[in-house]
Length: 114
Image 1 (cartoon, helix red, strand yellow):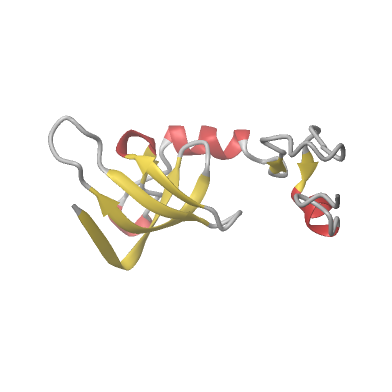
Image 2 (image 1 turned 90 degrees about the vertical axis):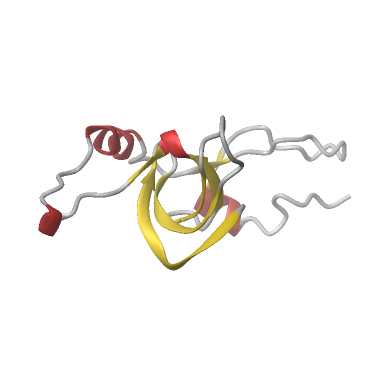
């Protein structure tokens, strides 16, 4: 069952970052809830399993930052990397990681001219 969240709920997805949950997918017993989350830093939408999702700190509720969230944020203080995942066979493949800024500045990436 899919439930749209209105309003969206701010949360943190471990290893992905802060974002807004816009929906929840519940496949029933024996399954984690799946949080459909738009990540703030990248704009990516991830379907995150429940065990990877944490609410942020809330001063009025007396809730401090979760140690796992603090650790996740400390690890992700680098610029996100974009990598080619599949070689296209045109000979212009770029297997090295590019910074987001470099990838967006290159008009031929990820599409290679033949």
